[in-house]
Amino acid sequence: MQNFINFIITGGTIDSYYNPIKAKVIPYNHSSIPNFIPLLKLYEKSIFTEVFMKDSRDINSNDRKKILNATKNSKTKRIIITHGSYTIVKTAKYLQQKLSRMDKTIIFVCSMIPLTGITPTDAGFNLGYAVAKSQDLKPGIYICMNGRIFDPNEVVKILSEGRFGSIYTK
Image 1 (cartoon, rainbow, N blue to C red):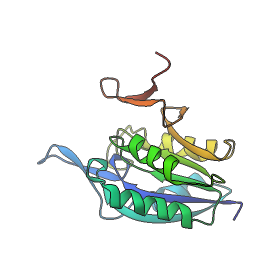
Image 2: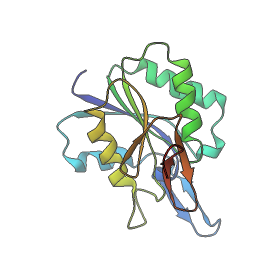
Image 3: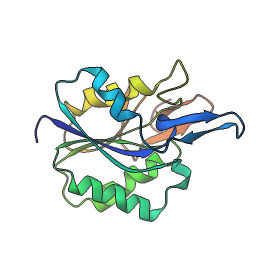
Image 4: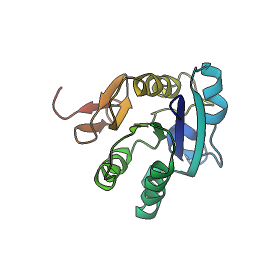
């Protein structure tokens, strides 16, 4: 399945809506990403695997096993995992530890603002950037955010700036 991208969906802000009563974002019951990706007019075909829809702070070890299994069971060589920003690094490192054979390009992506309902948003750009980089990167696990590619072992969420950065550069 060379010309396919498997989007593994797990919730997070990218797939949430703002609830003013609770003053926070809440994941949708089902992802809006399968409706958004066709708008990009990609040459590759897309497969969508919705594993669950959770705030990443609620993701536990059983959920990470589900993500791992979805990744292992994917027939594609290119996988984009949408995830919440709070624990994206933990899940990416988990997959690095658990995947014994690395023959797939696996990119984690998230956003600071939901894909739908609030504008402007970084979500569409981050998704498009992950798709573009999935064509060029060697097999491995990456996090794509804010127009950069990060190794899960170097990336950190900089809450005060609303973006991700490397622990090696300022």
